[in-house]
Image (cartoon, rainbow, N blue to C red; front, side, top):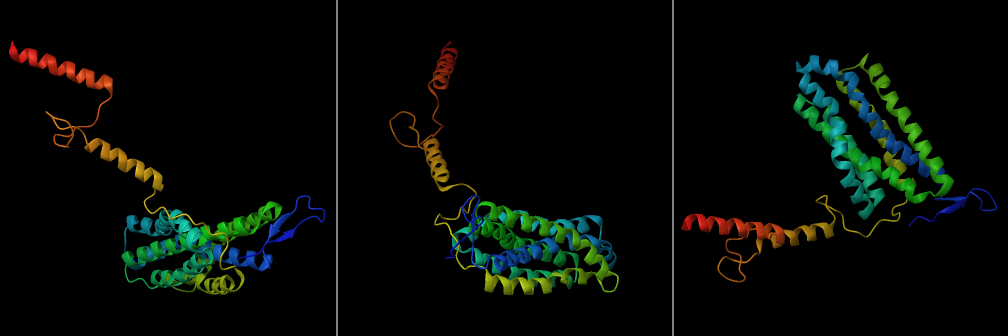
Length: 270
């Protein structure tokens, strides 16, 4: 468990807490986030070369362009919760490690389908690492120190995102389209070393179970009870049982139903 140290003014006014070796920890988190930010934008510049190499249509190119974002958006909430429960540094390291085969798969893809799979896998790796960096900043820093850390994390991350297309364009002037996806490999190696050596192994993990269905546990139990209430209703002609089950009605609705049944019986008798 990381031990926070106090920073700020000597008299305590406006002071915050920060982890030991705060500068190195913050650099590690920023570099890990930079891997995700750089991977996000490098594909856009390579799309014309990819289209010519595979002779593919615009639909496939659009999917390749958004594949990384799709993998990230579809996994970020769940994987962030897994990291909060089972270990943030573990999720951080796993995300960086997974980004390596994802980049290699995209760079050496033999067809657009494999390339799309590589981009989706890269997005999932970002979903493991990227939200964990911000969660660690929120857990390790407090007060004004946290604000400064988040400002640096956000500002440098935006700069790396903007730098991605320029670096990819520079590389594509000399190499094939797949080289754009290899740009982050050196950065991933640095991020992995920094994450293993600088980031605390356990930082305020929660003890709550991970919501795997998207609905909190008490809501799932309530929904199950409601479903059981709909199915378990009196059988016609007697008390209890479930035969001929219909949903339980409110009193007003039940009265209207009985009145309609009585009118129907009168019509039949007449």
